[in-house]
Each structure stands twice: as C-alpha cells, then as structure tokens.
Length: 219
Ligand code: SF4
Image 1 (tube, rainbow, N blue to C red):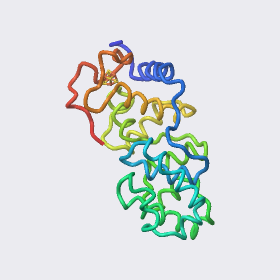
Image 2: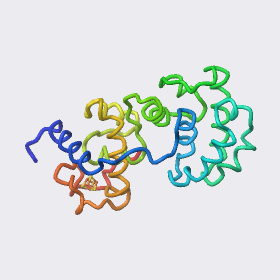
Image 3: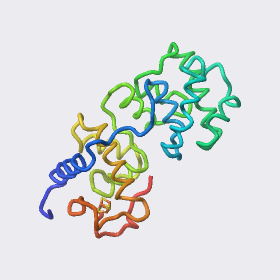
C-alpha cells in the first residue's frame, strides 16, 4: 500500500466503507424538511435515540413552522429538556419565526438561506439539504471530522475545510452516503478515545494507523 497514491487509497477506503455499511442511513426520525431541521438542531451534543424519543410529541403539537413560530421557547423547552440546552428551544422557535416571516412558511433549500436561520450552521444545513431535499452534500459532524482525518480522506483543522476536501475526494453521488459510512465507522470502530485499530479492516489504508494518535485533529 506504501506506493499507492492518496487518490487510489481514497478509492479503496470508500469501497471498503461501502462494503462494511451497506445499510447506513439517517438514525433520526423525520418525514419532511421541517422535521429534519428540528431533529437536527436537537441532535447537537445529544444522542439520536434521545432525540427520537422527544420528537413525536414535538411534531404532534407543533406540526409545521407556523405552529412552532406561534409558540414560545418557554412552552417548547419542557418537550425537549432531555436533549440539553435551553438555547435549542430558543433557536427552533426563532428559526421557525424567520421561516414564516422570510420564506413563506417553507424551510428553504439553499445553504445561504438555511444558515441565515438562528442556530443553523453548515452541518445542520447540509443535513437538511442532503436528507430532506435529496441534494448532494456532506455534513461534517464530529465523527466525520475525526474518521476522515485519521483515514487520510481529508487533512484539515476545521469542519468546513474537511467538507471541501471530502467533496474533492469522494464522487458527488456518494457524498451523502459517505457521511453515514464515516459516522458508522466512527461509532463502531474508530472511536474517539480508543479506536479499535487491530480489528479495523481499513488499517492498511489508514493514514494514522500505527502512528501517533496525539496527532489526531480536533474540530
Ligand atoms: S486503523 Fe484505527 S485510526 Fe485508522 S480508521 Fe481504523 S480504527 Fe480508525
């Protein structure tokens, strides 16, 4: 593998990830762009399982941006308290108010418009673009950032740079799938603290295997 170019390694890494995780897909439950946006805002620093426990009641009582815009963070917060910070309730309500005032009550489908909403950064916007609107996008969360850097698919110190490098390293039609492959690999094998390198079938291709984990990049 030593004489291989990084481009050849990338191709083999993606082939192996595809083989390992054929069923990889979104773990959050949602059925339209509004639900995707709300669930993704709630998922920051919270497990998908926990988010899936609270969203049925949220979507039942606030079924669209207009209903959410009419409530207040104080009313919403008890529904989502177990997902952490009160700021999430504030952001969801304020984002929906802006969706109603500026976007006719419809969740917008461009990066620029999505990131103009309170509490919506690039990662959340990319999730909405990829999984609610079916656009090719690579959301970079903590797992994608870590595993992409370790494997050598990217080598950068910010999520935005990793996203750009992954866009170059991965065929566009695989961007959304690769997002899930890297998340699954990060959760199952390439753990943050103790990556299971000896049982990792990607080790012969991995940039960091056998190297100094303290060189690990942090988002
Ligand atoms: S070899 Fe280790 S660091 Fe590399 S991808 Fe596998 S688990 Fe992660």
